[in-house]
Image (cartoon, rainbow, N blue to C red; front, side):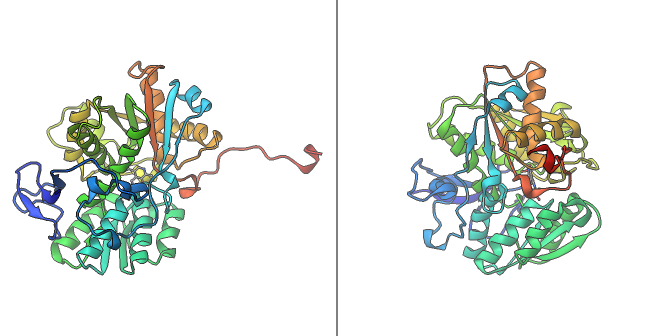
Length: 386
Ligand code: F0G
């Protein structure tokens, strides 16, 4: 029988999953969910919960809070191949989740945990997508959500979702990083909020399923994705460790985390071989990844080490150029997501990726998530068409 605990990778301390903690009492590092005697057996459920035995084996199926997340499409498209210079590039569209981003995969697990631990209030900081998902899943479960939002740094569409789903909006001056600081300060003072940021190890468990789904369909050499708070980077490495240790895969694809140039502290940390991460004041058009002090950087480093991973950075112009190609291919995504493909093009041009490689790029959010930048376009008169 699988047995799950909260475990500190760094000092080895273990805690029961019935405790509401995110960081190690002994050394302060962010905890992992660890499953002893994990087995690779799939359930009859769809989407994320098909992998229940790898993410939360012990939870009672009847108590799961789910809106049918996961099982998203993996597209191939000749225009994207042409744009990126990679013949076999596949786009995994996480914008197809219920609230329009990958966050739903983590949220179904974390909000189910909030319920199992009998919380009636959730809390998160967000650049937008987390707050939309947190608000939706909390309300769906019948509990209250509080979202701390840097109002000047979030797309109106995402804020609209959080408000409409009934979240309590806490507006702060400053950016995502100060919002995240406020979450940490709040939970240090009171314990009646359940935190839904990727600081919560259950979020990571849910997000692992993106990788399980990709690896079921293709054998990529590289998996690329936009990186901000580094929850996905952490989750993806953990998912690949699972599959490798269970004997499901032999070859481990290289993870490629792509940051926006103006928000690239992880790029500096890894490529500059810094001892610790040095926070930056983030600036980028891709507001979802406008993050200067990512909380998950240690777990993310572990993921890169396990997969011989790469961190790359791309400019706002490169992001918008890739977005245009993705949108014009009829697939569409929000600006941050396009960084995943902009990074492929850059690495192909640099000779690190090759035309014959197989690449999976993760589009993290839906095209309607941020419509503040209307693309340049030509309009016709009615007389032009008849
Ligand atoms: N792409 C999108 C669309 C996002 O919303 C985020 C993060 C990321 C990529 C980066 O993922 O944090 O796991 O490295 N958005 C968070 C939010 C921070 O608050 O919605 P990450």
